[in-house]
Length: 390
Image (tube, rainbow, N blue to C red):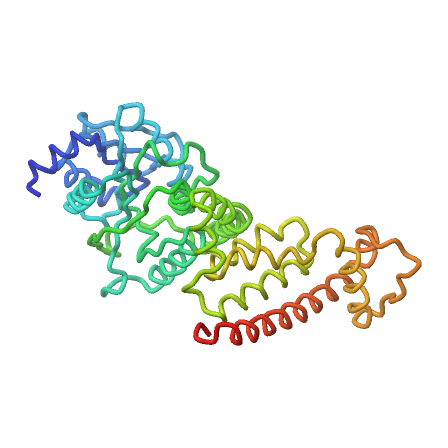
């Protein structure tokens, strides 16, 4: 695309460029001047800078500038910028860091990719993290982030940490829980959970230690990111995966559901046996109240037969619960010198509470044993009935 075509597309699609900045006086002017070549739809959020940032920005009267009195983090600056962009009537925002690592002449890459899509999309710049000059800690952090993003969304990307992005402003979440660097992880995961496509586009990157000022604090920010990912994983397993399974089930006709989710003609006997074993293990494990969500989530993640896993997880349906509790307590007794005679006790959850460690140990042993027996037995049965599908 020519610069003229890019400018027209930016205007027609109501795209702005959002630049959060904090003490990047060495590179800020170069970044803004590069963006101005393509558009003056620019919003700069000065996140409490204490250097000459305010003086530099005073030369740009044709763009929107927001000065924050104190530094509160990149995530907070982006949220304020998004709100301003919506107030000004924009539908999309391209975010570019002000530390000089991003090239403004990659803006057409985002514009072309957006025009090629038939739906709203969130685009993330894919940097070449293997090139010379890229710090190893940055490459490791990106791979770490890529893995957890895949686990939480099922989407495989090569770069999830780049701040060079295009956001569909009307499709991203309205409220957020994180204010700093981890915000950029939260927003892409939660946008993907809304079934908005998240994709990479190739961009260039420059790491110049003489100019670049990084505000990433390795220990504090990595800890915050790890806590966020822990929370996102819990939500994924407890809610997102079961929700998607139920939505998918409702969309299917009965015949299609039976064929794809029950019979799964392309699923091997081994996969089906593992599905039975997984369900039985979760059903007998001490995770009462979360068995269905956990079973379906793990079946989806490991691409097992969701229905078989779900059905076998119901091995702990109400009439069997007293027997399972008693059996678990009996099996766990030798490991904690616990009580084995429960004939004079009422089998209920109060009994479990009073012998908790004994129950947990016994239930895990019981779950492992029964799931192994059922899995192996089911596999042998399937191989006899349908040997060519082994």
